[in-house]
Length: 116
Length: 115
Picture 1 (cartoon, rainbow over the protein chains, first blue to last red):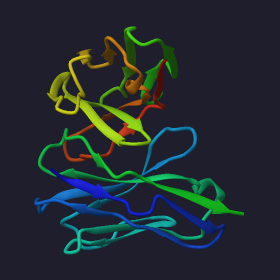
Picture 2 (picture 1 turned 180 degrees about the horizontal axis):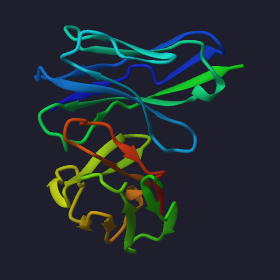
Picture 3 (picture 1 turned 90 degrees about the vertical axis):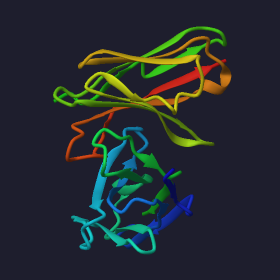
Picture 4 (picture 1 turned 60 degrees about the horizontal axis):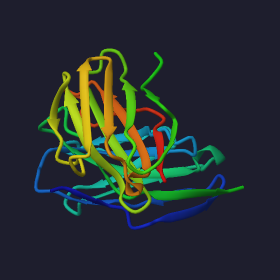
């Protein structure tokens, strides 16, 4: 079974600074997708960024970018120019590419605190 | 679009009572997922449906839990009888599936407290 590990229960960063959240995963598959989801205090999970394993280029969405290291099975999220609205729980997630309806496997999450 | 709609948002009940959580997925989505979130165990996939058919219910903790999807616009998660260890936030999510696996749209969750 696939597993996703987030080793940082909590991270803190000054507003406008850059922060990197770590994620590692374990799988025997060669084709899969990785995600970062954000859960603000309102509880609703929101997709932040998506990476396809067969693409070597790291995904970028505005201030959010990933560092995908397939051989190391590492998938970190970098948030540049941190804003107060970035404060949330961040979850790394995995899904095989084989089944379009397969559910995501989530890590335990990292609580990101933004210091004003 | 209204997004994924869950009800109730909060439920407090006593041990032994039946609990029914409801979900309306986004119109046009063909996959629906039920997740449970606790501090100890994080987000756990309980069951998912594709085109209203249950595909994998291996995450359902025990026979006290059941889920149905009678049509494309409605699903229920039922716990009978409920126990204090069932206290959690239950999320419903839907997706197009297909060539966009993993891109889930979540509801706001139902917080269940079993006394």
